[in-house]
Length: 151
Image (cartoon, rainbow, N blue to C red; front, side):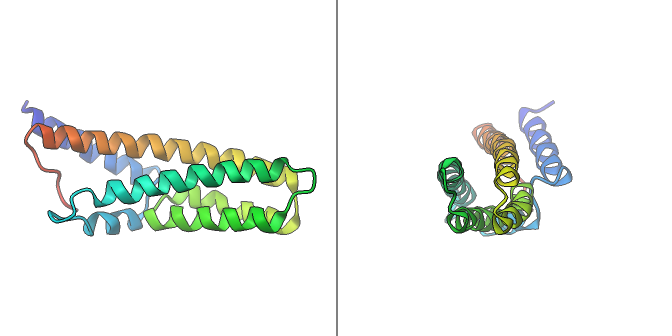
């Protein structure tokens, strides 16, 4: 089988599983639709910013929750930002954990917040790995002379 066809199939399967398993939602499709010849790296750039943002916020959250006197307003502000940035790229499982996280901030429930922080870190690392695999497959496909199917 042709390498291009094989890569296209892998890419299609991988993308389908991202949606099927709930890692991504429609918002990610909309991002992909904004990418064109004049801006071929648009999605990778936006997602890279999401990675940078998320890692900074996750570190801030860990630091804030370690304090003797936790500033729940600050924690909530970080979670709110994380929810916004994950929503903007369609990372719905990360976004999903932010909802109970914000409730725990409101209740000033440290244990709940720490549990959610672990869940958010877990979901974030999963979606990060899956998106990095997606981008690698796209690069391999282009290197093999194929073009990835536009949605």
